[in-house]
Length: 364
Image (cartoon, rainbow, N blue to C red; front, side, top):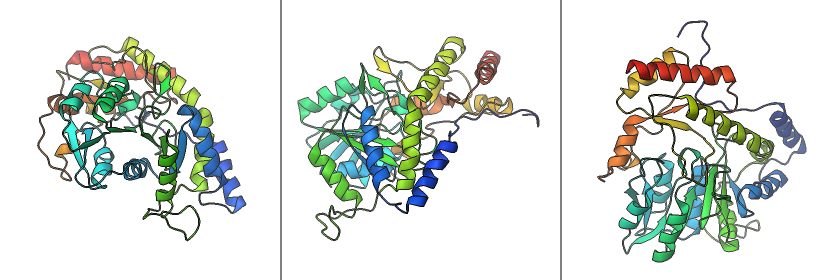
């Protein structure tokens, strides 16, 4: 890349004057820990999960962990998860003492394969934790039917999928619980944070207890809990970002449409009928190419990119397990996420297409 060439980043957090003003408002109020801003953020976020209860926490990982604890997962239980995901999906299971059982993905969607889920069920299976990877909903109708047949809990890892939906029903509103992340590179951010969603009043109350040392009233601890509260500073940022989420999502989808229609020589994302993809990542496959060389050449020509995820979770040193997951293995070798974020200009999009098509045609 020449000194004059501007790198088009793979992701770009969008934080402006409104977010800064919201933080200042909280600092001036003197109420910084789980106060009125958190309560307001929870109420407002419920509009994107079809009115479910919302419990704000300090990260998506905390949300996944606490959801499983609140639902009673324990040592000896098994939870079916994909291996093609971020480690937090399986970490949250292991931290409860339960065992993550890794299954393969649908190669078209990169999401957990319902047939593989059903095949992995044993008498110890207690829950399924699908991931709405890259912003595309998992096959929730099929997964919920499997869960109903086998009396299993479902916790949706929706950390990358704010506003994603199937036939108008939003992710985070299908299972016993859903969890979103507000990490800086997500489709909206609170700086750091997460949100648990549930249709159960009992589950919501237990989650609120768990995030606050097990107490609803001060010094009256009902259960052994954590300190995973969200601050009002983070909630204030999240509230501003939430007002922009719909517009940003529309722009991500428009950018993805342009990429769909103009990229050649690579496999573009597949979206099933009735699925609303929110494109946290726009992930192509590069079969027949040396992905490392392809990615390096993109950077050389000014287009950022990333590999999510290069190592299946079950093969990480933290788990080091043996599972035969051929589609997962294939995906880890071929996927490449390219810029799709809302701050891209039309010139940026045309550059991304031109660079990728040129590299693909050259057979990198």
